Image 1 (tube, rainbow, N blue to C red):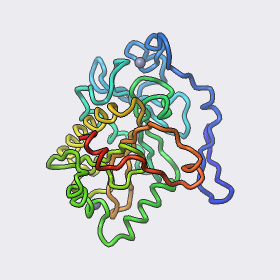
Image 2 (cartoon, helix red, strand yellow):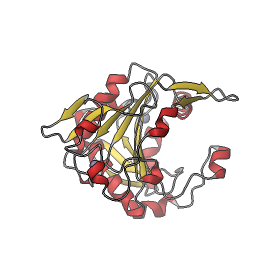
Image 3 (tube, rainbow, N blue to C red):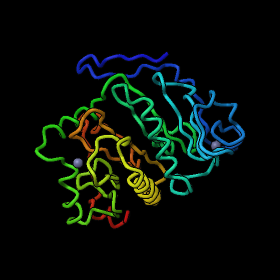
Image 4 (cartoon, helix red, strand yellow):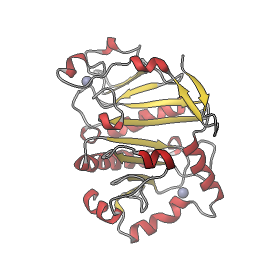
Length: 280
Ligand SMILES: [Zn+2]
Ligand SMILES: [Zn+2]
């Protein structure tokens, strides 16, 4: 079973899961025949936790090579070549993420993300999202939560209007905006931000979930025009009322290099205003 170790200087937790070295890589020729996430291959995964539709449109099961206890996989389409922007049931996918999130939200934090493409860390080339319940609040979430707590006004609520003025809001509905942050960590990064302040996606309304689904589909479609690999990160802040839930879509056009590893900070090489023209 996976366990946790701590960085000897900072004490930051590190997930220790050597079993994951044995997981398969379902990339390459003839992959659909051997893909464990395709319809007809259900017996290749651990027993199902839940499904949406019959025949299924969305399927949830435990990760066969868990990095943590409770590590789950959510497959959003039975079709091998599907992309999130092309599925007709994106709102059901968001509802499924939220149900899985709620299932684990009694713990310290739930990492929820997807990796699309090898460069983004995917080991299976079939759309899926992962939920990893963690027994600690990871450093990024802790730092952001502290910044929200210390701010006089929520930095997301406060800067949406400024992003509009700067031409960085790409699209908006009555409930949410899709924007490119004015200081993104990665070129062509997009955020989907619900307009109403809430710290967890489980607190969103049905209308907000619909907007998030629609805007996430558009974000993914636009991201795929700048490169095939990307991550989607669902940034929740359980028990932190001052924090503001958002979804980040991060294209992985270049590798994380020495500067980023040494500093934990990023170099933005694309002016977000120019990025916004491409992503709108
Ligand atoms: Zn497949
Ligand atoms: Zn806010």
